[in-house]
Amino acid sequence: MGGVGVVIELWVRRFRCDNAGCPAVTFAEQIAGVTTPHSRYTPLLRGTLTQIGLALAGRAGARLAASIGITAGRDTLLRMVRSVPEPDVGEVEVLGVDDFAFRKGRHYGTLLIDMATHRPLHLYDGREGEDLADWLRGHPEVKVICRDRSSGYGEGARVGAPQARQVADRYHLWANLGQAVEKSVNAHRSGLAEPAPDDAGEPLEAEPAVVQSPKELKIVTRLRDQHAAAHELWEQGMSKAAIGRELGLHQATIRKLVNARSADDVVAKSLQRAHVVDPYVGYLHRRWNEGVENAAQLHREIQQLGYPGGELAVQRHLRRYRSGRGHAPASGPKPPSVREATSWIMTHPEHLREADADKLHRLRERDAELDRLTGHVRKFAAMMTGRHGDRLEDWISDAEQDTLAPLASFARNLRRDLDAVRNGLMLPYSSGAVEGNVNRLKMLKRQMFGRASLDLLRKRVLLAR
Image: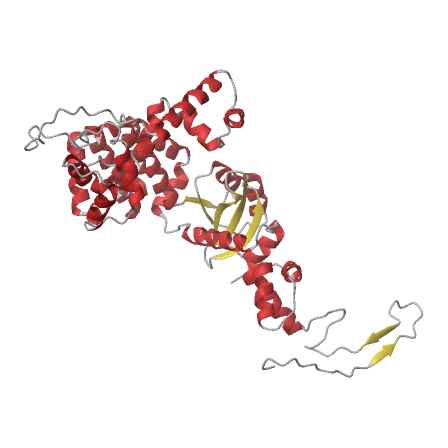
């Protein structure tokens, strides 16, 4: 107390058992609230350490306990957490289901949430529909199941709780639509650039120097080589996993390379990534053509215009023009990236900045398919925000009949899960509480420093507040 160690001496009675058949020869009197048999901690101290373990897990919890004068190792804290009984599930009418990653791309688990109280109910290994069905059979009171569009969860909910209404989460619907829009925009990426005006003003002074074509970027060369190698092995009959081992690349990268029809499809995405120098490219090229080739000076000049990056990025941008020692090519504004154009289409018109709205308007005027794509997206958004699920089938039919293949594929997938999607567009339920608990679970898992056994993680998720 007050930084001074205190020892409390208790005088208790010890009893001797006269029954020869009793295994306890002697036993000591217990003081309620202070002592328990075979325990080194009082109930109050044990409860304090358990709460520290639930909040901070082992290492961080042990450090906090030491700072307040309690000696307890990390394993002791974890054992205390494991010994706490799990809370009773009780009656659940609206259930939320989502997966989370123990190791992304490799190992997943499933989290169940009571949507009325936002309280975690259960956590189990894997994301198979059979496990969900087994849990639902023990809870016939479930009336609504909020889930993502996983076919496994859909089948598990249908088998385990045929009486429940399945609701597809609107966030996942919008995210899936965004992926289809991005694929559609990527197919039209060559038309994203503004057409060059006929007479763009006075030309720069003519000089005899001949501009050499800039050398191809190393990343472009590497992507072309990887694409060619992956397709060669794929045509030989090798699996994607085997190709990944052969080339030393991640399976996701191999999947991207194999699914790309040409190397240009892969290269285009890399080249269109927004860069910190992009807004100042026109100024840099003009100053270069005026004879200013010092990267440090150009860096200082664009800093005064608001450039937030470093000098190294400017050096890298100018490096491609130094070998020819001629004029940099005439440079207009960089065409929008696929993701930028996608964000314009996916954003509510009232929330678009005026400049972006103007760019989208001109883009729609130039490309009829992107104009129709924008119309489809805005109809879907109005249907989703206004809860007009009765319009879903008409929207699906219109999208399927359009020539936009990714959008048509998205529409066909909606038809496979039609009832759940329609419920998601009509009912007030959402998986927002599930996503919030999944994010909290990720934080709890990171605190465990690799000691995230399933039973310990389940206790922390179900009991931590």
